[in-house]
Length: 345
Image 1 (cartoon, rainbow, N blue to C red):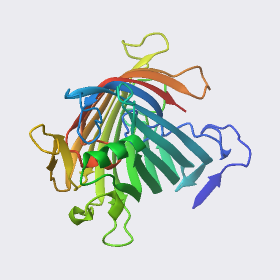
Image 2 (cartoon, rainbow, N blue to C red; image 1 turned 180 degrees about the vertical axis):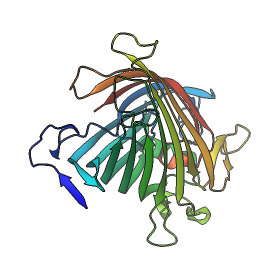
Image 3 (cartoon, rainbow, N blue to C red; image 1 turned 60 degrees about the vertical axis):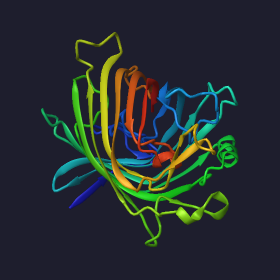
């Protein structure tokens, strides 16, 4: 028998406040979750590439790049229920975010390289508390519908067209679902915590030819277009929060977070600079494949005062794998190292 508790107005109990539009106090996003709607400002050194470098005089292998994520978690309902006599907390929410990747030190025009838009709803969170070590709780997350669409900047579109690239742009737009299981939810607490997540994402297809992207004749040479075949992506995450650790500095405690994700590298051609070529570039044909991508953050988190919403953290970030941005996910090698300012709701 299932018994559900909650009210139209927020109320307090041992499980936390419940009701419509009440933010949940559990299921904190991992800092290293590359798809989370967490606001981040990141600046660092990233891999240069002919696909997005519209400055012909800049030949360095690595350049200064910036990434800004603007995101929000949208609470719809928080409550609790009993299942077979066990009390569980749950939350229903949506999410919205955009990731802006730009080359602000480019002497040509400081172009926006890519913008990724993401929306998810409904997302269901269910947690069972054990309040014991080594497993404090188990969290199930199910995102039934996620949409992502991406766009390269106008200046980059003109650059690619004028340079004569066979592909000017790809229309990356798709829907997917996601499920994950977490041991020891990394929500802020007084004790040190080791959190682990195992999860996966499934690309939805209405037709066999559907995939992550499409292409129109005005966007390039469609004769070489190959639709995506792979539908599954898997990942594992680990996060250490050390509020009781020796590296705590005042309110700031250390956090180390890592994600290893098996992503789909898109299967259309990319380009490399080639001064000996008449076009100034060469076409690299690389088939679609799975590629491991590693995302690591290490720094300090400020939990704020008790009951405060919104927390800041400062981190070093390292990423290596496929290029993670929009239509550039066809590029197999991209690395980034820099600093990140993270704001969590």
